[in-house]
Amino acid sequence: MQKLHIVTDSTADLPETLVKEYDITVVPLHVIFGSDESYLDGVEISTAEFYRRQKQSKELSSTSQPTPAEFASVYQKLAGSGESIISIHISSGLSGTVQSANLASRMVEGADIEVIDSGAVSMSLGIIVLEAAKCAREGKNKQEVIGVIRKTVEKMGIFFVVETLEYLARGGRIGKAQSFLGTVLNIRPICTIREGIIHPYEKVRGKTKSIDRLVQIVSERAVQRPVICSFIHSADPAGLEELRTKAAAKLNLLYPPIESELGAVVGTHAGPGVLGIVFLPV
Image 1: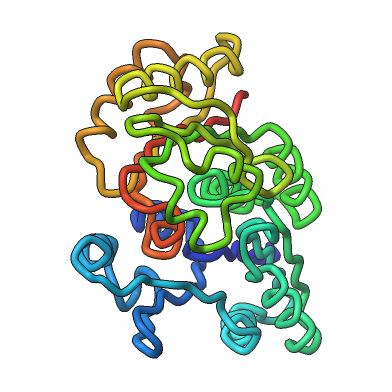
Image 2: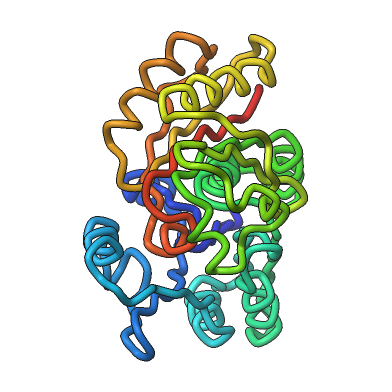
């Protein structure tokens, strides 16, 4: 049987247990402190260490995508005789990672590589990657897996609440949520991702009400259909617990939800205190 490799990047925020279980290759982005202190996301800096530094350091972190050479090195190792690669990445509206991957795919002579812009980030990308990896493990061919990816991208939803828009604004990833800047104290912006960029959805006062509203929004969108879900957070385990409890009571969960903490790259731009629900109606 022809081997089909699934590749993604570290902004998928996939738990390491799932990466290993489904034989997914993750190419790390770079997290940068100061002018030259650079770390590979999830490899040279842990999520816990990143948030500790984000909280304590006066220096703001920044990020950079993998270089084409870094992608090409990964592709070269995977592209054996007759083997194919599907490389699924963070939205091109949020990062240049897809462009690097496309350049790299042309650098590896003779390799069968399909680069896909997911239009997503964090576990909305992660679930897309997992669905692809499950299909690959079942023996589906490249075109069949690509078809599943396209359908999953179309159905995927994400809503999240941020503690502050300051980090998204600083990193230039704020998208159309720019209109929410300057909100008053204790107002929590709820955002979504459409067409590969961040869009404002509504504003809610207080953390508890924002969690209630997140669950309500997803429940309304799912219309009682079973959903594959992931709960995401950034340095807020208490908020995650509250979200988990309320969502379990309201949503028709097909499987136990995947819980994921935003990694260093996504955390750089989203900041601490993010809570969100990623959902895939089935």
